[in-house]
Amino acid sequence: MQRATPTCSSLIGRSNGFAWSYFRLDTVLTLLRDLVAIDSVNPSLVPGAAGEAAVAARVAGALRTAGLDVEVSEVAPGRSNVVGVLEGRASGRTLMLCGHLDTVGVEGMTAPFDPVERDGRLYGRGAQDMKGGVAAMVDAVSSLAAGGMLSTGRVIVAAVADEEFASVGADALVRECTADGAVVTEPTDLTLATGHKGFEWVEVETRGRAAHGSRPGEGLDAILRMGRVLAGLEAIGAHLKAGSPHPLLGTASLHASTISGGRELSVYPDYCQLRFERRTMTGEPEQVGLNEIRRVLEELCDADPEFEAAARPVFSRPPYEVPADDGVCLTLAEVMRARDLDTDPTGMTYWTDAAILGNAGIPTVLFGPAGAGLHGPEEYVDIDSVRLCRDILKALITEYC
Image 1: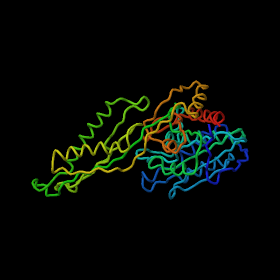
Image 2: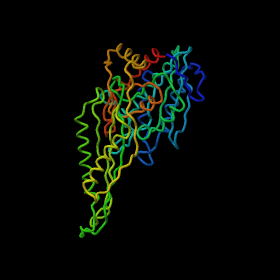
Image 3: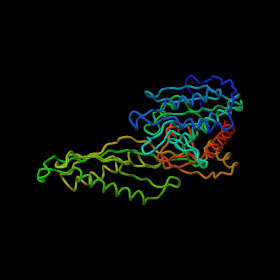
Image 4: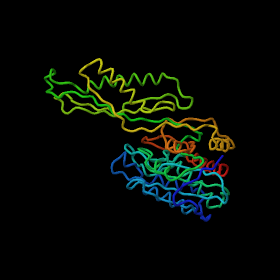
């Protein structure tokens, strides 16, 4: 196979010098605690939130201490990517390890940035999604660098911004870097995941006519008309649920996400706005959710000449699936099998930056620690699974590169 040519801007061709540094016995847990203790809530989700700058600085410091060449770049105001490169002593394949630095908000959590260890778990916002995976990949490469243990190839460690919203970090990354294969260390419960669903956000607005609440002959109720739209969406959802499932990803789905409308209690509402999410599957056409709801609106307009509504796309990201016989999948499976882990391919219901890497020509697999509480008020990662993830990534780097 012809080796892809990495293009990590100013990092190309620079030697890490194989600097040695002192590592404590459990550096991955130390790093994980530090990452969870840093507020990195995505400001695109929570206006005024901290963003990734501080946590990016911590990751960059760990990689520099280990001797990697590191570049920190601002991909949006206050939003940072970190890219570190470790060069082997001879040419070989390039492996990218990628994870995101941002988290969702902390509403309902009492101490989200106070990492607490209990019963072999570490609790805190981002522990599972995905600072456990970031700690594992950073520590894996750091330990190889400190010991001068990479004989061939190249490793790119990328910690990116904004995965929880628009993935501006991953978009910027693939404009600067490429690799022969990649691992996104999202939480997969130590399974080998070869694909995930996509998503599509759609906005629908029904229109009415404002009038005094006592004069039904003059008003048209946009909110009641949205009820007809919701019934159509529910029918679409039932049809999707009854469809033939993808062998790894299950079935497509949708849900109504937000709704608003009306002005006052005694006024007929002249507008109602609904936003819904459609989870998409490989093989489905682009804008499938938008086209489904537009057909519903056309039928409602045909049935009622006074019915007025429109739908528009808001944002979408594609599903992704990498061939299970790609080199990075096969090598990771070999390493996992040596540790008695199940290597049957799985799929993730959530979307990840793997789709951006994959669509940029980098075959990408998902592999990360175990945990629970994804986006919930009590989030944790299993500490031993972070350690095992780190060890498997170290072995993968050696074998793949």
